[in-house]
Image 1 (tube, helix red, strand yellow):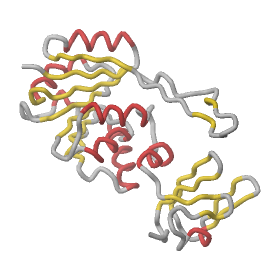
Image 2 (cartoon, helix red, strand yellow):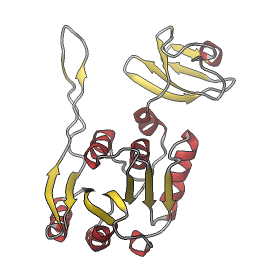
Image 3 (cartoon, one colour):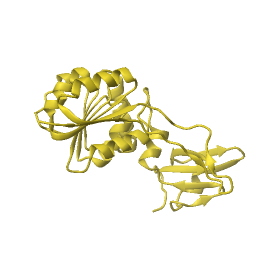
Length: 246
């Protein structure tokens, strides 16, 4: 499929990536090189124009390069692993609260049948909505601008939950009631103290509690001198997983 007016295009130049929407007059300059609107229109995905390679963006590209944010997002290394651990598929209904910029929700939406997302802060609610609308994402998400503590939900209604709020402890009893037996609970916490409090709050109603972190290191792809980069995305938060028991 060829690129046309209004399409999103991922432009790769060396180790740099640029996410752009094609419109007449568009031009991207990198050093002394440039690529223009007329160079891209009508080209097939994967085409090379000079030293610029043209692709359609993945969800990771959209989140990392296109999403506006006011808070620290959950990195793809974490969010995609969380989605895997939650066991999401198109038959599952996910509960999420603490939406932020909506990056994690976009990942969950791609895999789950339905996502019920709660965000108490109006500015984050509006930002997440704008991000999704800009990129045509999250059509299966029901977004609520309210505290989950005040939400009216049925018992045994959700197949899984993801919690990303500063203090999840006050919500644990309500979460337990809202989850189906055997459902997976996942949460990200920035400090060990918050994590310890959450473990204490759930250990009598959940089992198989796990805590881990995901470390992500890129390598320099020179085949003659293959080695890791000097910097890496290491600790970005503690991930907790547990299963509801009855």
